[in-house]
Amino acid sequence: MDRGLGRGINIGNALDALDGGPELPLHERYFDEVAGAGFDTVRLPVRWSAHAAATAPYTIDPAFLARVDAGVHAALSRGLNVVVNVHHYDELCAAPAAHAPRFLALWGQIAAHYAGYEARLGFELLNEPHGALTASRWNPLLAQALAVVRASNPDRTVIVGPADRNDVAALPALAVPDDGHLLATVHYYAPLDFTHQGASWVAGADAWLGRGWEDAGDENAVRDDLAGAAAWGRQHGLPLFIGEFGAHERAGMDSRARWTTFVRSEAERLGMSWAYWEFGTDFGAFDPERGSWREPLRRALLGDPERTA
Ligand code: BGC
Image (cartoon, rainbow, N blue to C red):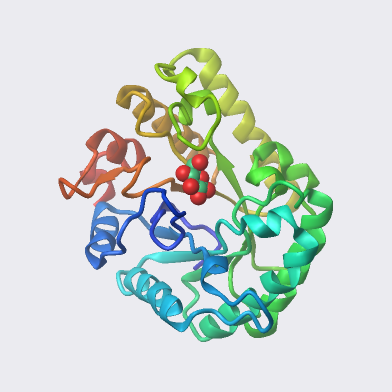
């Protein structure tokens, strides 16, 4: 993996699924679809915290590790980059001091397990730190987690993002450790009343149904947000990776395609790599039932097939 991840997609809600939420089986053929469509990267969110012991040494369930391995191998064997993260560790965000030792122990195990893997595997320390895991608590913890990873993986690409759920506005509060192999990540879901309209986990989101995305004000907001992130990246000499962006299936497809095209093109214009949220569930660019891409979203992400072939 060089420090750019190109064009990517999250295979979300597979290894990170929440109880009662959408769940995607991790079929090999999905990786064929992703590679065949022309993506460079798969971000593979993993909810390690739900599959590891609650007490020291916090051993990861070997059967679950084997499932993650299957996803990692499926991506690497098709020539894709793959990013493995720690996803949905909400207990850590609620009680950072109590969970920090477990978080670091998880990284100790993950890093040791994948130490011999090729450079196209990257690690992302934590998805969307939030709640009590504020910047002042997250900055020292991320430095500790990076040190744990570096003990076994001196050169591997490691991705770090700011508190406040990896919000672009939180970048200035991110303390970047001195390390030659980092990427910075942000997530982009603005405006939330468009991208999360009808989302069951966002209070009041049903009132947003019908919100389109089209006017110049909408475009300017995206432009400004991403330009701010790009300026921060230049200042810190760090390439930026928009690790998640997407609009929920309950938003209108025309607006979803326009928003996705615009965010994706702005990101590329600013030299950022990206990964769409997500492959095959409630934001899905791919329809697992029909076994085909949702063409407006596929085109928004990758353009004309002949240009990406
Ligand atoms: C979460 C998903 C959610 C998405 C958009 C992700 O980080 O894991 O559950 O659908 O963000 O809100």
